[in-house]
Amino acid sequence: MKNNFVSFVHLLHEIGMLAHTPRSGFAFLGSGRQSVAEHSFRMALTAYVLAELLEKMQSVQVDRKKLLLMCLLHDLPEARTGDLNYVNKRYVEAHEERAVADIQSAYPCGDEIKSLIDAYRENSTIESKLAHDADQLELLLCLKREEELGNSHAMKWFQKALERLQTEEAKELAREIQSVSSDAWWM
Image 1 (cartoon, helix red, strand yellow):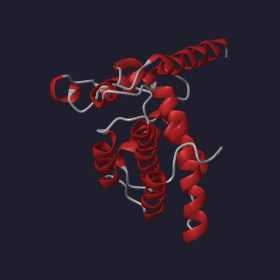
Image 2: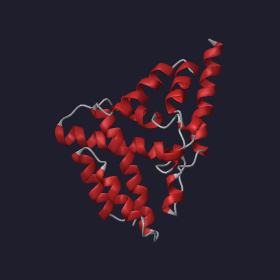
Image 3: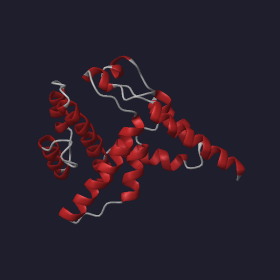
């Protein structure tokens, strides 16, 4: 059992690396910065909001535990590969599948982590669709803030992210993100 504790400590340290892994796309935007951990945290809570909306508006049942874990773990391989943006991916191969396989074999809960990452990538369940939408909505929230701070390119990126949304609830949230000031919640 002691080895399991050591393995879990290793996993927690690996997860901690996400706080030190910058999201690389902001360099191309020209402003803003965020760690992968910051992104995953707000993405998970955005997914929670989406699940709440979907359950209330359409009476669809969502496995929230699966959804939240999927959001929190979807970028875990980036602790090993770094975050590659669209331009990087044209020239550099991240070997994410190998990173996921190594994570799977390294930890007692590795099979579950791999299963959640695979489900996210397959994008075939309501949970994975909400996770993908939450991923884009989290980006939209960042872009809205950058636009308010004066980055004229942020709204071009905003439009591209809008095109990737899948659910009507996410599209409605995106319209509100676009129209509501990021400081309105406390004003």
